[in-house]
Image 1: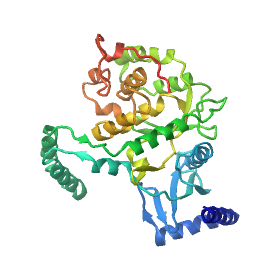
Image 2: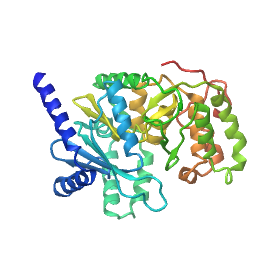
Image 3: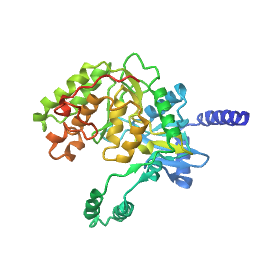
Image 4: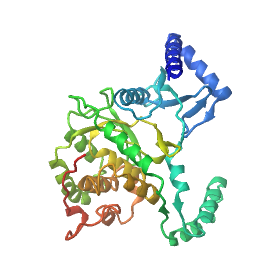
Length: 371
């Protein structure tokens, strides 16, 4: 314990001294290390360097992500990277107002949750062979066989998940998000990044900066306004009806990761070892974590089964909010192009079971959920 404390204290001092050098010099040093020793990480912007160091290049959100990681580290015991350095460099690209930057962080051990889940999948005979063939087609660019492979996969029952040894991990995640959602929120603006600035919002196939907003209702209005009303004017009455019960609620504000894909959760020895990629995080209405998660795992039954078992928000939580966001996705951004027969699909979120006695999803009600 004493040795670990001394090592961390020494590292803190050395990094503080290193950060006294000019940013341009430090940036060149990191780039030299990336070129000489760097290996690819879990994302295209991530580079693994020696000595357990990771660099991540980003446009615009690099300081917001660093601030979010520091906030979470200060208020919780959630395993997050340690921010070692943040560098802003260069002029904004043409047509952009955001500058480019680089975050230098400590590397967390563990494998992505997606890989952990995949090893526990119980698949029908022949499914893995078809998945392997599909993977080869994608990697080689030979696409002729893809339609037939997909047709065969659609005939196979949905895989199930063996979670017999998963309870420690499930509880780790419950504890982590209880802590995350308990961080005291800011007074004003209430919907914003960790540092009080705009949010980098990732939805409907788009990433853009929005806000900050004085209250949750301003945020809800801004999300609703992203709807392509020019092309989907005939759907607006239904969308407004779906929005009514959501707007009527007084949602509390919670710190939210907002990109909780299985690639951003790390697992080691069956326990939570890290949560990474906080660039979209910030202060959102309490339901936003759930609807963001659902968008990440659309058509991913194994991920859905896993998070259902975790039960972060209770059974069928935020039903009306989920139904609204699903419908808005069907009418917003690039995802609006993905839905044929959209008028029917937008009011039939596949993750929401019809309520007993309810004629359709759009008219169903939901009560508030406690946490």
